Image 1 (cartoon, helix red, strand yellow):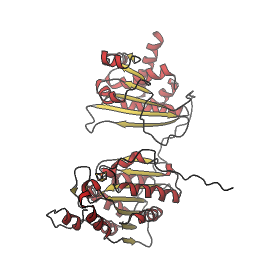
Image 2 (spheres, rainbow, N blue to C red):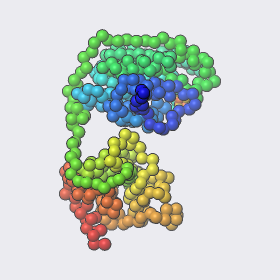
Image 3 (cartoon, rainbow, N blue to C red):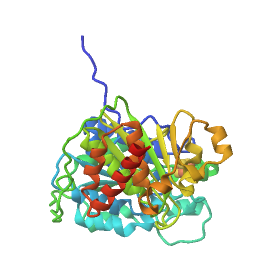
Image 4 (cartoon, protein in one colour):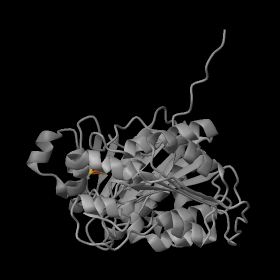
Amino acid sequence: MTTNKPKTNYLTDKKFPFCPGCGHGITINALNKALQELNYGPNDVVVVSDIGCSGLIDPLFATHTIHGLHGRSPALGLGVAMGLNQNKGKKVITFIGDGGATIGLQHILEAARRNVDMTLIVLNNLLYGMTGGQISGLSTQKYKEIIDFEQDIPPFDVIQLAYASGARMAVRVNAPNKIKETLKKAIETEGFTIVEAASLCPSYGMKRMNELVEVIEEENILEHERPATQIRDNQTQSLIDKSLVIQKKYDSDLKERKGILIAGSAGGGVQSAAKYLAMAGIFSGLEATMKGEYPITVGTGFSVAEVIFDQKKINYTGLDKPDYFIIVTQDGLDKVRKKLHPEAKIYIEEKLVTPELEQEFPALIKVPFSRLANRKSMALAAVTYVLNKEGILPIDALKEAVSTHRLKDIFVGVIDKVVGSLVEN
Ligand code: SF4
């Protein structure tokens, strides 16, 4: 009897967020199939994206993912590819839309001229989909004629430009049934490869769909290949070799995956507290992830961080339903209010609790976090408090984690003070 080994799925189970008929899904499915045939491990692939409809892909991939500013995914991908330069068997795959490619053209040329080992996929739907269908620098002349756009400046040919800048392989592929093979070849090719894939946007081209299909399909495939390449050393230290190696020193009784969400204000040490909490998990032999979110104005507003612990590998770092909330300020509460759910344990600064909140979540746990530490250390104090109450990890593991910081004495002092106050009570 023959058994067919199930193919690795590089996609999460998230539903595609695109409008019905959007071409982006075709390329994403083609990439999944190409990776299956190439047999990379999901942890060997880094998918980088930026803003726009094409930027919605990052929760869809069960690989490493990085999401950045509009037009900057090639710059982010370039940095990661340089850092993985010495680590063969890893692959950086970067997505950008035609709008992003217009904004970040120089980043594409920079990655091409350095010829780093990265595949850039340009999803060209001929327009800025997320902001209302405006033309981009890659909108074709034919498309502009169709929408009666009165301007005859020719589009950038990103394929020709990238090739001229030093790309190993530069391909424009318009037929959906050729995308998988093209991507496979591009990913297999060492060096900078760029694939521009035509991707229809029915939401802004629907009325003219037939003409739009014509515009896309009449394009020829352009393919350039350099016979050989010299992958540049770029004299960068390996990202992996530079990684801090944390050896297990403590034990944890954790039985199943737990997700902790810490919510506070910018400047309140939320990201640091989450980082040390995650490190404490690793010191305790657990798998751990940490993810932060804060506004672009880093000195004001909310600061939220998510930490996941598990005994098993954590391939998807999203935290849809946290098991614990640690809420220390009003900014944090406002940010996560809609995520609160009755099955979670909600530890919250006592001053933030309103009768309405208490009525909705009668089991919430009010704690005087603001009396345990000053504004800058309150998140660490709150994390210490919850760890001590829940026993997920030993407090010594948290102390070990903060000891990697130059202000370790202050941080250890905060932890000791919280633990001491709990003993007194
Ligand atoms: S607006 Fe266009 S490109 Fe964006 S998801 Fe919808 S169909 Fe796709």
